[in-house]
Image (cartoon, rainbow, N blue to C red; front, side, top):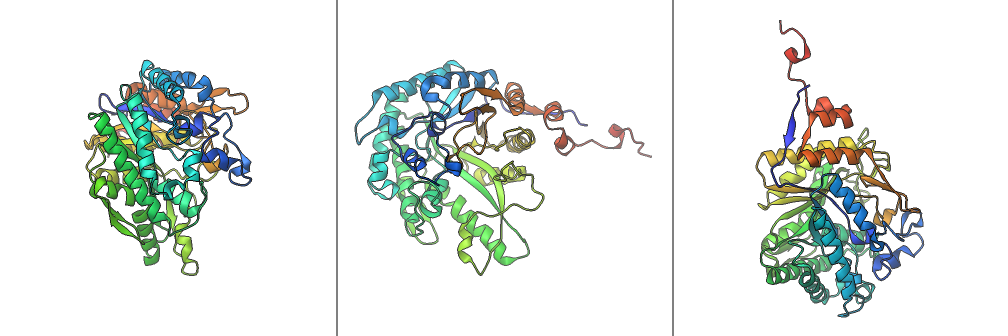
Length: 453
C-alpha cells in the first residue's frame, strides 16, 4: 500500500453545516411549521418540534463538539420569522440571540458562514403570496439589511439563498415543500423573483459591508443517461442538468434567465457572486419514457448494485463530486463546498463516502482551483424537511426524545481529517478499509513482494 497524505492548503476551512429550522426547534411562525401540522405532508407525520433544541441553548455543546473535532468553521442560518415576526416588526432579542450564537462560534475558533434564507419563510410572507409576490424582492432586501446591520461586525461570509433551484422546484413544481404547488407556469416567475432577491441582497450587503464575501449555495445534482446509447436518455439527462443545475448560476453571472418556457434579462444580477457555493450529494440515472413524457420532471433512479444509503435516498458517487467541481470551476470564482454528506444512522457508508468525496475535493485543490473550504452535512442529526426524522445525516446521533447526543464513528474520521488538514492512507485503512486499494493502490510488483522477473 502506498502511504500518502492528501494535504490541503493552510487556512482551508473545515466545518459542518446546519440550518435554523432543522436544528433550532419551536419555529412556530414560519410556513414549514404550519406545513408539518397537515397530515401526510411529512413522512410518518413527523414534526420538527424541539429539533436539536438550539434555541433552548444546546447550540453551545454542539459547537463545542465541532471545535473539539478540529473544525475551524461552521455554516448556520438565520430564521427570518424570528427576526421579523410581523411585517416590518423586528424582534431585536432574536438578533441578540443570533449574536450570542455567532460569538460562541467565534470563541470556539469557528469562522461563521451565515445563510439568510434556508427554505423557510415567515407565515405572513406565505400569506402574502410567498415567492410569487413581486414585493418579495423588497421585503427580502429589508430583512437582509436588518440582519447584516446587526451582525456585520461578526460575519464576513454570507449565503443569500440556499439551493434556490431545489426550493423553487420542490415548492412550486413537485409540491413537496410549502406552498405545495404543482404549477409549471408559476416556476419561471418564482425563479425570476429569487434571482432578483439575491441580487438585491448582494448589493445591500456590500453597501453595508464592502469587504464581505457574498454568494449562493448552488445544489448540483448529477444526471446520467440510463442507456448512454439511447439518444432520448441522453437528451433527458442534458435537459435536466440544464434546467435544474444551470439556471441560477448562469443568471447571477450574466443576468440572463433561461428556462424552457421563459427567458429574460435581469441586469441587476450580473456579477453578484464573490464565490461559488457548491452543494453536492449524488448522481441519478435518467430514462425517457415516451408514453409518460411528464415523468421527465420526476426524480430518476440509481443503477442496480449502486452503493446506497440506508433509505436508498443517496448513492455514493464520488465521481459526481469531481463532475460537480469541474462544473463549478467553469464559473471562475473561488469555491466553497457548502454541503456534502449522506444519511446513515450506523456509519456504515458514511466513512467511505466521506473519504472518497474529500479525495475529489483534494484533486481540485491540487489543480490550484481555489477551493477554500468544505462543510459537511451535518454536525448533528436534524429534521430533514419532508423526510422528517427518517434520515440521519449527523456526525453525531440525536435522540429526539431525550436530546442526548452520541458520537458516530464517522465523527472520529472527520476529526482526524480536520486536525491533519488532510486525508491520509492510514485514516482510510482504519475507517474505510474496503476502499483503501482503490484510493491508495499498490505501486507495483516490488512493493507487493512479487518478483519482476
